Length: 218
Image (cartoon, rainbow, N blue to C red):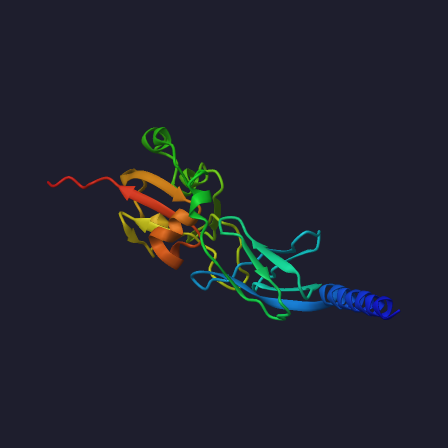
């Protein structure tokens, strides 16, 4: 009888341990945190998903999120243009993320667009605002005296969302209306991570590269 009793105790013990493991895995906690990029810029609309489920939340305008998940769950953080991260919860109630640029992905998609050369050379009546409106994916914000350019959308409700303008290789802070339309040789728009790697955090909202014709010496 003793072996039988020992076997029963062993089986009961194994079932009890298995029960504890199941309980531990099914116990839920609330995880919260903030998502930014490598330049410490807030990322709004980033996806936080519990692996293997349909449970998913998104960061708010300040990059914050909150999600209820199992203690032993794994979270998947993703956003277009950035490397997806998978983080094991391991009982942590706060998980902050800093996204790295997904340069491999961006190398496979169109990284820039430009104003058509014929438009520049033949349509002399078009002003710089009208020229920029021919570029797909760019939004013109015109208050009458200034032209502001939105390329990557309204990424932050509190920060600067406008594209960086670079004139002949130098960041330009003046009015676009002050640039002589007839002097413009080319306009190129960088829309993604390629602009950030070249211009750092100033290019996080995209970059507009304007080149003018060399002035002939008299």
